[in-house]
Image 1: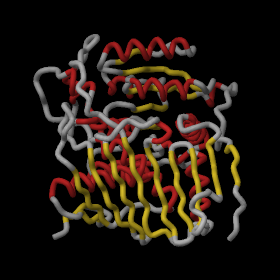
Image 2: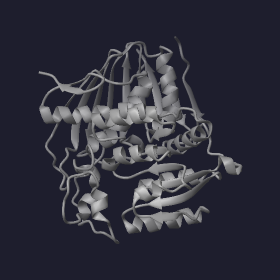
Image 3: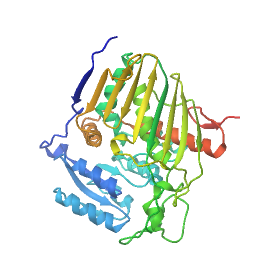
Image 4: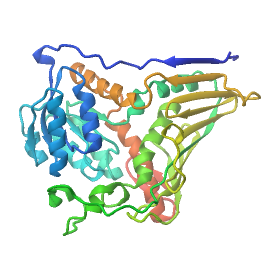
Length: 399
């Protein structure tokens, strides 16, 4: 198939248009976890005139106060909570945004579904395969809408890339290579708390540590008590992107290698290589190195699909296809009109539309579990020193 070089701007899959909704269509939002990401996503919800922040919960007082202030500026007057179960008991709230640290996601989603709330939960969905299976089963039993914050599912660039792969432009793709580069090695000033923190509530289901630890609170993504490390935090996005492009889901097996942790904080490695084998007959290799130099955001990550007719490179905001014999000049170029940050806006819009229509959202529970599972199996591989097979119900370290 011959292609002339094309370059054009892509419009978003759906623009965030405000509309005056009748009372029956209004969504009363409860926010659980009002840190930086929680407030950012809350702001996307509040761009829709039919959404009101009815309740906000956080165990760290400065986060709670700032979220209350920001929602007030957007026209909402939410009630403040310091215990999420009390928020879930509120009859006012019909949908919740969960943007807490990773170690709380599993329990909070289960509790929100039991309370009859629709759920938008940030990634990673959960910490273990067992938790993921429980969440998928809970969603199936409920009548609730669940959207996991895998915003590439709503991103024009990846949706267009999926069409290119499915159309056969690349030929058979047997290997996908991806990477993410950053640096978290620099010494930091000692973390401090700017106000009251309910340390006991914040720890929740994690291992108990008696004294409040500002470093753990601030850098929880680097500690295995609260997360799967940077390989899970960023690998969720990368592997979900691969699943979108390749039309894939659960893996057959995963293996991983890593250096010892070198960062001055945390106990999880910053340099990891993950290899996943899929039943669709391809390998996906992900390299994350947070001991690299810092790149501009638009250049810090990419996924390369190696077909036998062409290669497709997808980064944060650009997609290019290089045909065999003409790899110096792309035959297809796509640039996202809205940019990468717009993907969150469209993803929130998709959730809100599904809350109203009761249709399945772009990133339902199983999608979130598939993405979370690969780094979970990678961490099990690092612990065992073996390849880990996925049976569909459990993870088994191979001999």
